Image (cartoon, rainbow, N blue to C red; front, side, top):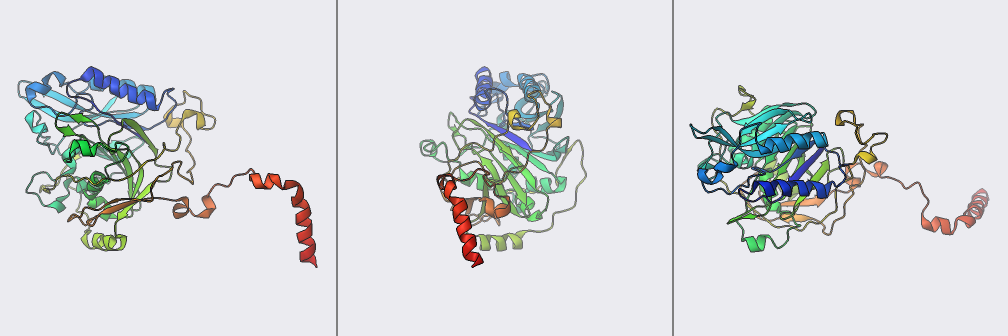
Length: 437
């Protein structure tokens, strides 16, 4: 599965320029339209910006589901790139009743709207203009992706400040939904000093990433053999006093392991593209992996039974919430682009070939990236059973994944062989004579 996250820096109320910023980021990453992906995810309130002060402030940016600029852009982009597009927008339902939502629209590759989700757990900025969804978190089946769970931003957080940490509403929702793919679109902020936070824009904010993963503890504890792919699509940049953490990432959770397929820096504008059929780049483990595993095994409990489901969304009968605000350690991480995913490198496929007919790509044995560090680590402790003592993100070598047997062997002889090639037969004969004697 090929997933793209568009991380960029929209500004409040500047819709025309925000559209241009998104188009420019896509154009830079894919100048000739040859890059393939099955799903493109954009951040929360992608084209309106996020840090609105009131309903009056955001009102000109509100749009009805399916008839506004966000849905138009999503439809055009879905048809152009032959992919599913998920975009966050400010939804207007009934102006007379003051019914507005922080929402997400899902458009399939045919340009049809197949889903609309309204944020359930509102951040204080949302509460200045939006209502909370009465339907709970999104879940549904999507062709090509299976069971999909989706949330927006602080849906990942505890619902109320007095909710216990281990309520894990959204994490339990994922388990109950038996989701294969989880989509989280965000406008996640840092509480660090903006001047200090922005010093290393190419570096992901691993403490934010660790916090996101900690909130998925029920999924990790489920210990499923089938991998669950989680997409974190965040924005970057600054709006007034709000500084956003970027760090968009695609991870896999399988049998209690957290694998990182790709992650962007906290301050970069870029299109993250990963292929989950390629090997992951990193493994995220506790700073003391043995102790962390023991803590996780003690903490993990069987998931509760499925609740009733209505309108494609569900939620536990008893709200399970928790009072923790995001935390943010800094890391060092620089790498090159992901394994190439272009129409040109799929054997026998013309540029106009539809995604449904694309042949499967073989798994690559060596990730195509370089690193300038040995590992990246979060040191801040928390009371979470997952990475409670900090976390380490370590590059995965091909030998850890598939062993020597799958490491590609260059069919061409090495340069040193060519230099001495003329003498090799004579040497072989000499060795044979010695063995014969």
